[in-house]
Length: 407
Ligand code: HEM
Image 1 (cartoon, rainbow, N blue to C red):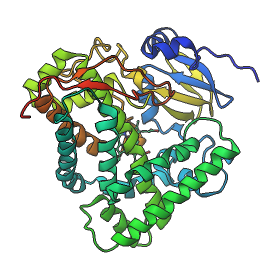
Image 2: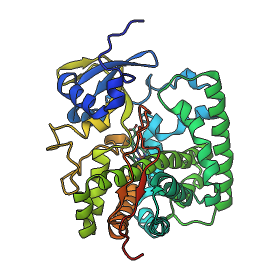
Image 3: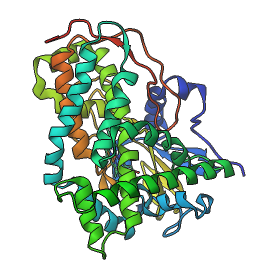
Image 4: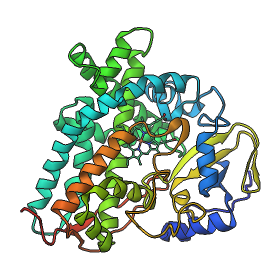
């Protein structure tokens, strides 16, 4: 099959400097074409087009309405397609999302603040004691989000490593890549591990938690019998772990990178801790952890004067939309005081990040403490970015604390 491609995600220009390529696409080629899994794919980069697609019921996440891809087989990993919120369209998505939302009710989120603060404070304490160069990713950004995800699920912290180790294999089928027989076998093994592991945890917790607890709220929905099945409950909880860990790790790393390389902004945060929540949104806008999400056109759809045909695959370039100067003034400037409340890093519409309230608590606490306790944190040298297409991230961020407050 020949395809008319106008965007090469494997090209040297994109690997070297994504944001320059995103700008060129927004300006000259806002509905670019590429090939993903041998499928012609339309790449949307303008804020208005990405935002509209998130919000319209005319775009769906399932490649064929009401069906799941045959490539996922019918083993345990396929269950993660059938019951994971990001993989589902209405009406199943609407039903499960309503039930899963009880885990992030106002009361449940309020009850998270105390333990999130404890975990982050302990993590910052460890950093503040360090007087040599250290890798922020290894020392904080991989540990703290894992501890938070474990606590959310009531999994022992000691299991964090084992739980995380299984994740890449499962992501192998949940991502956009080709799936080989080996990839699928590894994903099935990993899915079965999660089903057994989380299944044991919820069975132990049954009857011990109130509905102010995220797992307690979901258990209530499951015990009702008519609402959430045991498999759906387990997959929803695994979904929280999967959706929260990597995104939060990358966001925290990006926050330190952005602040340490914009010292005037770090200074503002240190002087005015009330800016912490806004700083988190600005980090998410400026360096969005998730660069692309996938959708399918439910019918012919028009964007910036171009038509995407019905059933075509689309990639919504969140990180490009978040730098669109048609929407954000001077978008390549990292400015923690700007109005960034409509940034798209958590998506929008029906699949808007369910964990955003938790992430905002984490980000606010983390940045307030960073500004107060490590106000002089510095890059030891410029880090290297990984080349993962959807989630490019810094693998190692060498920093030192400079002057430490209250040490
Ligand atoms: C900075 C951190 C985070 C970022 C950047 C982020 C980003 C996103 C994005 C872009 C989506 C939409 C995906 C799509 O439309 O295909 C999403 C969905 C989701 N996120 Fe997050 N997320 C973060 C943290 C979290 C946390 C902490 C949790 C839970 C503990 C979480 C749970 C979820 C869930 C369950 C969904 C699926 C919602 C649905 O499909 O209805 N996320 N997130």
